[in-house]
Length: 100
Image 1 (cartoon, one colour):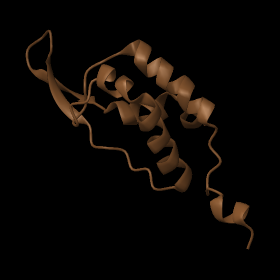
Image 2 (cartoon, one colour):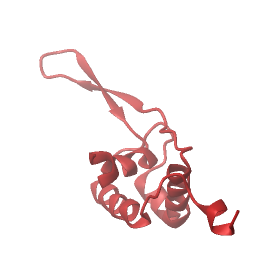
Image 3 (cartoon, one colour):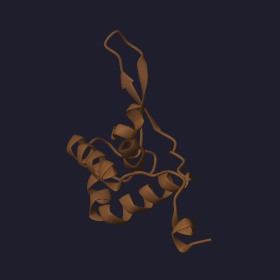
Image 4 (spheres, one colour):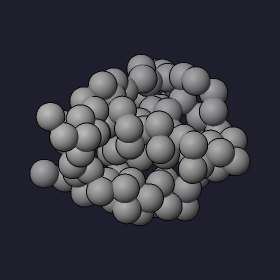
């Protein structure tokens, strides 16, 4: 078996797609998810974070984190539960990969 065959990932994901998705997530900002990592904290190590995310997605081992539930008051009394995903979950959701 050749070395290039060993290094191949099961899913061919262009790193530029994740970079564009990260730029969109960063522009939107938003609240932190269950991991409590803010967009600015993620941005401090964006290269490492995106590489790890790309590696997991490409190898097929990516599993999205749970979402944080936040109760939002409704106008007519009561509350509505809003799910807040982590930054790492928002990036694949913003990428063209998710839009089928």
